[in-house]
Image 1 (cartoon, one colour):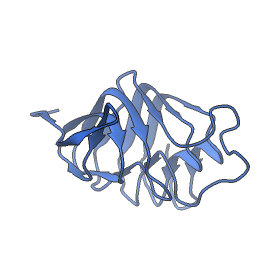
Image 2 (cartoon, helix red, strand yellow):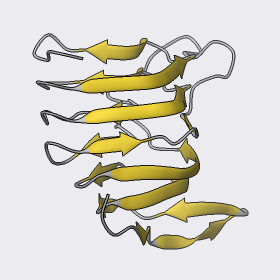
Image 3 (cartoon, helix red, strand yellow):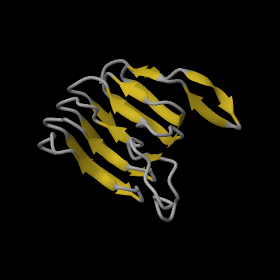
Image 4 (spheres, helix red, strand yellow):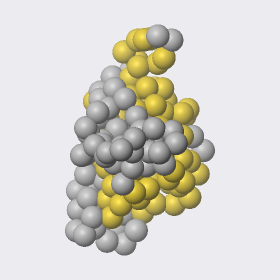
Length: 152
């Protein structure tokens, strides 16, 4: 995967690690994500992730030909732990969006759960791939494939 650098830490809030927004370059990600994080190179989780992003994806691919490695960790959104939706979905609030990038992948093992839309959303993606991922208690769908996508 090349050189791995730690993600920039914005600070601690209530004892939780808060990550800054920006582009991840073959990064290690863990903790709380407060704004959409754009991935530009292979990226891996090195701990569980809590997403507090509202109305937008937690993670979005920003380049073709890269993979997000969940490494056995869990990504958790803002949805209700029992019902997922709590009565309504939130437009655009995905766990992971392929963001019109091709030849991208999400590789487990790992869990993508409790997002108020879809856990993983394939939008305009050719040759996208998901392997060994559990999607649980997401409002709309665990893994949603837009009609402009192919080959999952």
